Length: 282
Image 1 (cartoon, rainbow, N blue to C red):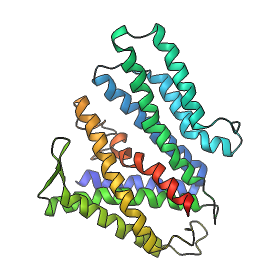
Image 2 (cartoon, rainbow, N blue to C red):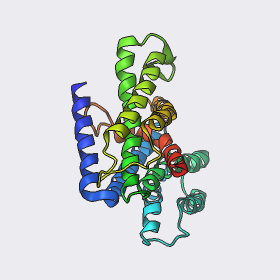
Image 3 (tube, one colour):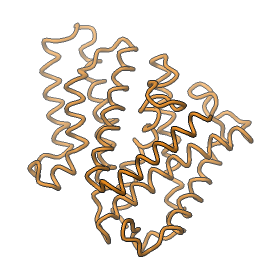
């Protein structure tokens, strides 16, 4: 627990430092690095299952997919180069490659799992980049919304862990994640709602560095945090399914007390597109 707490503090210091000193560009690159490392660990688990994904090409295309919204916004890429187009090109590239590569018995699996890795990790996380790019009513509005989204998600993890240890009695999905309980899940959702409201209430409305949209009140923040927390729990369970299939306790050993980068980013995968949709409707 001590290692986990220490790693959490260091990671949050890195995130906030990146936002404070590097702004949107640094934050986008941070998301991209996390996305690439997560995708790499995902493909590593596939190899433990006996599958052979197109690792290097998949990671290259995954990096482009994550960066695409920011690169287009800064005119580094033509406006037509969207994450959806890059996914389409990936289907073409991998379809051509399986004609002459891999054994006949695993060509379909190679195509399917390599593409799923692109969709599930970089394509989903590029929505977090889109959140960062939101600039209304303040140039850094997207940054504060992205931080809020991550904080609410990680708050659910922490609230569920603490509540589950004290009150956990009823197993949620014992065949997937034996330690998760319904009491922990409920505690995590409640903690996320309270944390989401507290962050909005505590941040000065006239802050030059960070500013929430005027419509994003503490009450609305608490309300939005509930489905975000629910998706956080589902994201964590999906990663547990993948790890069980790979016969792995953690996705890696990069972060002391936490595990791999996938163990850190798993909760962000499903909330990124949901958060982007909610925030754009504000």
